[in-house]
Length: 290
Image (cartoon, rainbow, N blue to C red; front, side):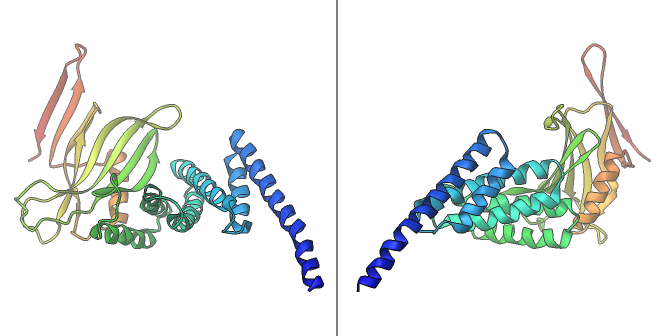
């Protein structure tokens, strides 16, 4: 009996030392946050999350800030097209979000599918189309079960890349192709083209490239790429019948087609050109190709 008490007493100071060590590492992580060294802070929180006992209140803080720093690093790398790194941070953040869902509130749980769509973007950025499709299927399954939060419950960002001085964002809608091709105008996917600020962020939306339902019966295609202007001038718009797609869209082909359009390879059957005159008025010229 005395031996057992001795071992218990011997164990108490060791626990105290471990706790002090964890607190020290947590304080080190806070210092890295203060100096904006997010990567080093993430590594400290990662170490803490892996070693702090889950019943310790410090564990929740370690997990929370590990997720926050990983999410930040994922976003920074994705927007810089460092897709290998953004995929690495995104995958780790998602695994930790899954852990946090059972700990934190419902608002926190919404982070899950926002990170899933970020992982899709990274895979598309790496040209991992098959892997990206698997993650898209998770989004569609969640949509079917009404699990998606506001903001990604009707459509989601699945692609991003830079072209010259422009930011290009790809979005996909969950809705299916209507059986009645004359019922409405239907777009399945859109690439938004933005000019950029000096820091690389979006400035003005120049134009949109719609994967638009073809109004009619055609055995060869269901969608046609259509260019619609927003703020761009000296640009050509119209239906680009050189770029067509079946209902099961080949997204690799679509991305390559978008890049061709960005280069100026349009060849539309109908086109309109928008010019801003010296007096400030906007002049639109429409041409129907014969």
